[in-house]
Image (cartoon, rainbow, N blue to C red; front, top):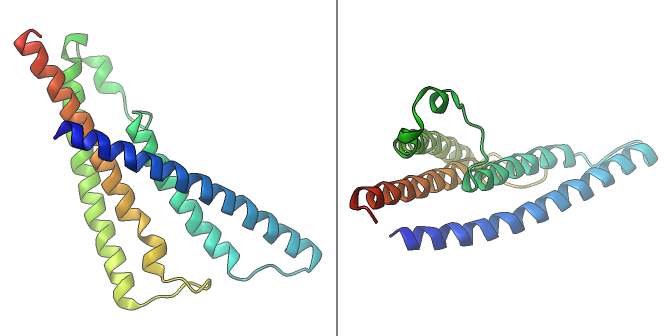
Length: 166
């Protein structure tokens, strides 16, 4: 199971990195075009600002997911400072499980949002369905939940090795 999750994580990370490169290139290119058009033609692309906002949303969630993979995400480190170092694995397991639960709840709430946008049939000015542009929200939370689950399983494996003396 752990090996399968690691492979899934590896494939997901490759996909996320490729999407990040494409999105960042698109944001920079579209942003430059928008600036040039506004300065030269005194009017920009009317749909570009909204599209850029959604592209930045995608960049943020993909970056957060990759940061979670490498344990470089935002975290509060008050608990580690208060507990003894010998409790590190148990403390980390508790943190990973709590983060997993929070990400799962947020993914569920985001899924409700995307479903309501789908049902409403909202279309962005760029012609894209709003639910498609917002789909990164539940997908991002699910990817982060997967990473926290993997971290928790790895910590459990470490704890199991300590108990067996391996």
